[in-house]
Image 1 (cartoon, rainbow, N blue to C red):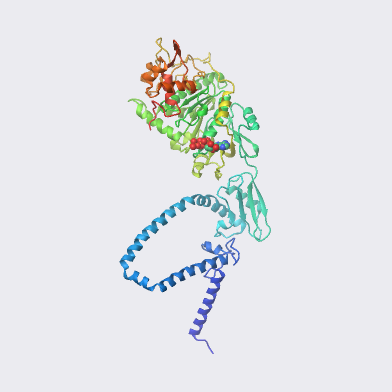
Image 2: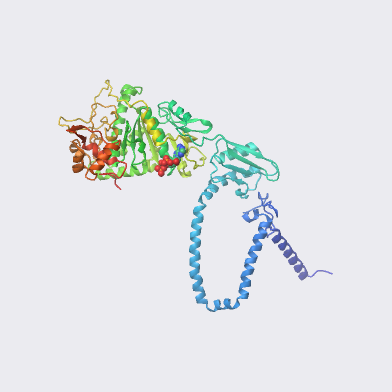
Amino acid sequence: MAQTKFDRQVEETAEAVMFGIGRFLGGRDMDGIKRTDATFWHPATRVLPKVEGRVSRSSYRAGWQRLTFRMTFLSAAGSGGWWTWENQETAQALIEHRDATLHTLQTGGIGVASAAAAGGVAYGWLTRERRELMREWVVPLHQALHRPLGYAEQTDPRMYLHVPKNFSDDDAQIRVGLPTHLAFSRDLVADLITQKLALESVTFSWHPEGRTPYVLVKKTRRPPKKAAFKDPKVRELVAKAPESAPVIGIGTSGRTVSVDLDAESPHILVNASTGGGKSVILRCITCQMLHTGSHAYILDFKRISHPWARGIPGVTYCADIADIHDALIELGMEGRRRVRVADELGIDAVDAIGPRLLILFEEVNATMRQLARYWERIRESGDPKVSPAIDAFNEVLYMGRQVRMHVLLVAQSATARALGGPEVREQFATRILARYSLNAWRMLAGEVTPAPKSTKHPGRAQVVIGGSANETQVLFFTDAEAREWATTGPPPTAKTRPAASPQPAPAQLQKAADGSATATVDDAPPTLPTAPETAAQPALPTAQAPAADPAAATPAATSPAIPAAVDDDQAVGLREAHEHHLPEITIAALRYARANDRTFPRPVGKRGAELLYRVGDLKRWARNRPRAAVGTTDLD
Ligand SMILES: Nc1ncnc2c1ncn2[C@@H]1O[C@H](COP(=O)(O)OP(=O)(O)OP(=O)(O)O)[C@@H](O)[C@H]1O
């Protein structure tokens, strides 16, 4: 008997229902398309060939997992229906009092929406690192790997690429799931993984056996976990380092990482987010340079970054913005003098050029802003618009290695704008980056791609020199060790202006017979500050450098100190200093500082038993003290 149309429809529907129930219970996709290699007991590892379109994450789950989810959902829906049936009266009352119900739902809705929004923001914040990991590393790796491994492009990368968040850490392991057919080139896959994850010195251990083959990637030759100066081997390494090449740290396979300031890069830029080890890096480089006889200018607007260096012979510590301004102008002049000497006597006339000068410029972003504002405040009509201190700084950067002046610049974010233009940034051929963001890497070391992933390992940095990045464990000096090392080298030598210098200094601070400071002219050689903190340091190459406050020695340094220059040269006892010049500091505090603060000025004379101090020296000491500065010219 022939089937009627109705019979056929019934049959087809029954068949569809049967298949539907089968797929439901089997945990399959309900449309019947098999998209992944998931089975009832095992989750999927890959998308099947020829599958088109997006594959949802649920398609990767094992059948039993999907069945559990479906049953739970059905029971929840069933319970809701059951409750409504059981509580018909309540439901009816809710419908009858529609307005009140709606009002309650609205109020509740706002609460729920706010909670959801707050939850969403918190979730977004907590998962931002994971999202960045996916976007910057895992997805690009998948795009490179899926074809060589024979996986469909739609395969969810998380299903076979197990890349931990801190995959560049020393003990991190990366696991890549492999296809069971093993028909791929190991060399190619290894190469792609190394390149796409910017890995250095890793080993691959292949596990082809069984139904879930995989490869494990681990770091092998990594820098040491620590490189403490107290370790005798490290100390020996530092002691052997050439004068022009302080050791920065230890790289992979125990390689010494250093930068030759004469041969490679006269200036160094250090970029790290807070807590990234900037102070430790600077301490390491500065104390080594002091050890070998360099002089250092520490321009520390934060005031407290390098307590270990205060009062060390050869160190000029400027914490007050007026002093930073003056110091930069002096350094500009010193640079010009050195260029002239190098020009006349040749760059080998090291003695005539003068000792190596390290200019440690802390927190460049904030300091540059403050220098500009300070100049805005003190500039008079007819003065240039741009701060002469910033000009002088840029000038020093461009002077090159022959003048033996080296800038060590520190920034949390060394944007071109903060430094005064991209070309200024180019002067730093060596860049040390620690705890950096991808943006910072692209900005500062864009020539090295892909960017190695930043690690949170304390003291671990990337030292980028000449277009290649070297993972380095930075040497760790404690404050006491840095101080000890800085002060135990050859003593900073006093150099004198070379006799052959054809021109006497066209301008220099002259002392009139009455002792007052007079004319300074452009291009003057420096009378480097014999400020409180440099009292023990010999003046740099210059003639009759009197113990003058730098503020008084520089033409553009129209700082507030200048009108008081005559006053500043007076010699006074501590009581008089307190009464007339530093009323904010008690006499007891002055006495305490004299006894305990190694940066307290040296006396310049005696009246009976009373020691006398130069007023300018006392004021400068007060401005640059680590604690809240008295008479500070800070602008905030
Ligand atoms: N090379 C290193 N070896 C061992 N530990 C280190 C090293 N560098 C930094 N650290 C650790 O990290 C801490 C923070 O370092 P540091 O004070 O230099 O960071 P910073 O970038 O100057 O911080 P901030 O921006 O807050 O001034 C140190 O106290 C130290 O414990």
